[in-house]
Structures are given as C-alpha cells and as structure tokens.
Amino acid sequence: MSDILLAGYWRSSISLVTKLRLYSVYILPVLLYGSDTWSVTEASRQRLDAFDQWCLCRILRVPYTAHVTNVSVRSQTDQPPVSSCCCNSDRQNEVTLNT
Image 1 (cartoon, rainbow, N blue to C red):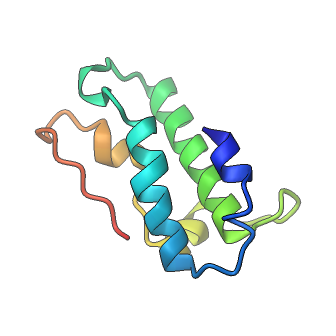
Image 2: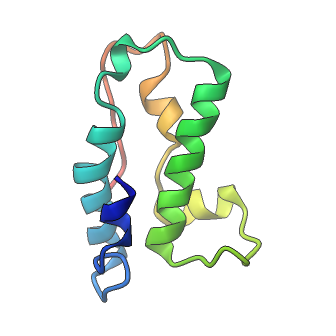
Image 3: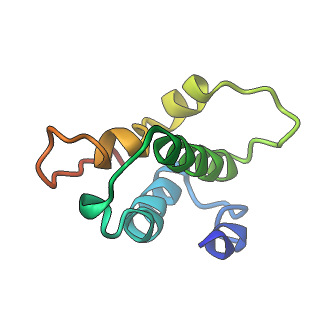
C-alpha cells in the first residue's frame, strides 16, 4: 500500500483536493476492507490513525523533521481520523469521509 504513496502522484503538481480524493478512493478502501468484522482494540485504533496521519503528511509534503501537530494536518486536509469512521460500534456500516 505504501508503494502507491511513494509514486510520483503525491510529489506532482496535482491539486490537494485531487490528491485527497485519490487517497479516499484508492487507499482507504483497501485499508478498511473488512473493518466491520474486526474486533478493534485501542492499539489497533492508534495504528490505523498513525498510518492515516502518515499518509496525509505525505500528501501535504510535510517533512519528517517538521514539528507539525496532528490537529493542523487534519484541519488542512479536512479529513476525520480513520478510527472515527470505521471503528465506532454505534455506526451501522456507514463510512463518510470528507473529500
């Protein structure tokens, strides 16, 4: 999955909106496949959110050495954490992601 992120798409001059749509269409479905049957622990929620955050930082071209908060990345991309979309027991198979 990370091979897609290393491709030239994220470093190209494609607009941020288009990159986020590509992320929502191609990467998130693969990441969340079968998530309705997972027994989700706090550790797995954190790992999902960490991968999601890593992807969003790659899309925004945030270097590893930059001290950028998760909140600022979320506000720039207007994306909710993945764990809030897929891992809530009170939601019935409804995933809504902002693009």
